[in-house]
Image 1 (cartoon, rainbow over the protein chains, first blue to last red):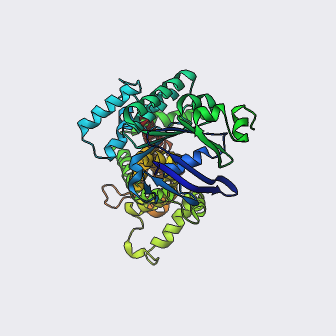
Image 2 (cartoon, rainbow over the protein chains, first blue to last red):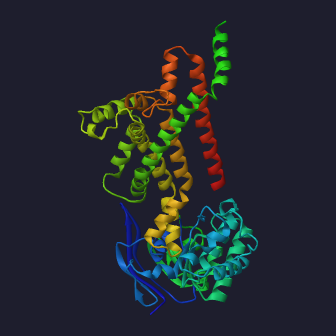
Length: 238
Length: 235
C-alpha cells in the first residue's frame, strides 16, 4: 500500500463542497504538489491530511494504518501554514516546543535546535523574539520547528505565497535538503506553477474540490491529459 | 477669584497626603479592591477559559449577557446586594453588610463581567491559530488549550488590571454595602477613597477631598503604568 492513501474524501462547509470524492496515493519520500486556484480545495485537503479536520466521508490510510482521527498519529505529521504562526517567545523556544512535548532531554533539545537552525540558515537567532522576525525568517523558523521533529509527513500550505523570490528560493532549497537528508514525505500546495515544476516529483491538479489529474510533474506539464489542467497550465482557467 | 478656591485646595491637599488618616483610607481601598480582584479572578478565569475555548449551544447568548452586565450601574449592584445582605435578606445571616468583606464581594461581582469579557476576547483572538499550531506539533487537546491560555497572558493581565481599576474607582457598592463607617482606631471601619471623597466634597472640605483624589488617581495611573510595562515586557 502507498504511504498515504485517501479514498473518496468529501468535505462541505454549509452549502459549499470543498472536497468532492477525492482519492489520492502518495509514496514515501516523495515531494507531492497539490496545485490549483485559490478556493479549489487545496487547504482543506491538507488540513484533513494533517488531522486538523475530519472529512464528511471517505477513508484515510497513513503508512498502512487506517486513520480514525483519535490516535497518536499527530506526532508523525506536521503542517506549515501559509502565514507562519509564532508562539510569543524566542526562536529557540518555538523550535523546541514539539521536542519538549515529546520529553526529549534538555541537552538533546539544545543540540537538535542548533542543528536545525543551521539547516534553515538561522544560526545565532536562538534568543531573538520570533514575532519580531521578517516574513521569510518566520517561515524558516516554522520549517525548522516542523522538521526538527523529523516527521514522517510534512505538509506545507502555500509556504512561499507571501514571500519574495529570494526567500522563496531559500525555502525551496531547504525542502530539497529535507527530502535528501531525512527522506521525509512532503506534500505542499501552491498556485505557483513554476514552483510546482521546480520542486515536485508528482503533481495533482485540484479543481472545484475534485482531483482532475495526477501524474509525474514533467508529464503533467508537458502533456496534460485533462482539458482543465491544460487550461490551468496555459493560464486560461479562471 | 474663582481659581483661588481650587488652587488653595490643591496646596492644602499636598500637605494632607501624608497624614495617617489619609494613608489608612488609601490602604483600605487597596486591600478591599485587591481582595475583590482576587475573588473575581478566582471564578472568572476558569469561566473565561471555558467560554473562550469551547463551543456550546447558546454561547453567543452567554457572551451577550456578560457584555450586558458590564453596563449595570454600580448603584444597582449596590441595591441588589443590599437587599440580599440586610439582616432579614436571604444572606443576612452571613453578616456581610457594612463590612470590608461585603464591599469586596460586591466589587468582585461588579468586575466579573469585565474580566470575563476581556479574557474571552483575548483567548478567542488567538485560539484557532495557536491551538492548530500546537496540534500540528504533536500536542494533545489539553496541552494545545494550555498553550492558548499561556499565549493570552497579556490579555489576562490586562483584564486583572482593568478589574482592579474599576473596583477601586467605584462608589455605589462601597457606599451602600460598606456604609462609609469610620471611627478612629475602630476595627469595623469601611471608609475607602471613593466614599471619603464623596463625603468630604458634600461637606465642602475640598482640600482633603482633593488629597484623597490625588491618591486615587496615582494608584489608578500607577497600576496602568505597571500593566503597560508588564505587557511590553511580555511582547
